Length: 284
Image 1 (cartoon, rainbow, N blue to C red):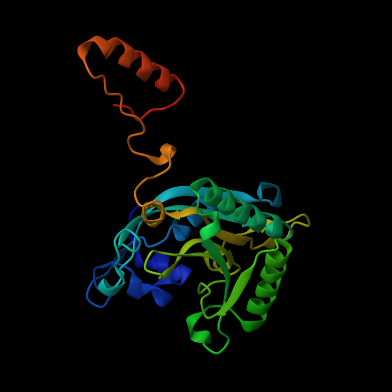
Image 2 (image 1 turned 45 degrees about the vertical axis):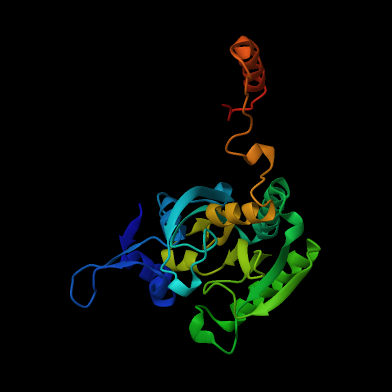
């Protein structure tokens, strides 16, 4: 669904920490219900997890979708296709046990690097370890001890991956630290292209549990990840990088066959059929 009641966002904490960036429908002070267009998919995908009880044997459990999202960006932040109010995101969430966290996180980074390499953007990005700000606790949920524990573990994963990353305080999501894959546009402004986030809190808020090997109920870790990020932003960056001359496989029109007279029509059709046979699909 493209919208949900405010109740769902209150459980996740987005209503308290992200409301200013959401499109709100209705007024809670005057009406019985208020709604919001979805700014992220996580609360919705969590409902799939809650559909039936889970065992440790079911994990890791991976959900993904190409989602349409809406965020109330300020007019001063709007910029072409790079920052828009309705966009399409390649988004996924992985519920896993503590023992599975490291490998699942590494798999998310591996997927992101694979996609960047295929798109030709791998050499243009930098990595940022976005942490919480212990001096601004109102911005986050959870206790300091848990934050430090998870950030220490995430740092160990990043070091094991041998990523050259920068540590930045205050840029974590309100529910956990994240790896931001950053890129600069042609004007030198840096934007986040892809993120991988460790969420150690929303599972508890939503009542998401699994039964472990000893029969006890536990809350899973949740990884929030993208593969190519926001489609519109990625496309804009590709157009900038290649100045419109996209790689052949990305071109809207890959080949145009132009016979110079009627007597070459048959040969032109033969060429088109040969190209179609080897997967050149955008032909005229």
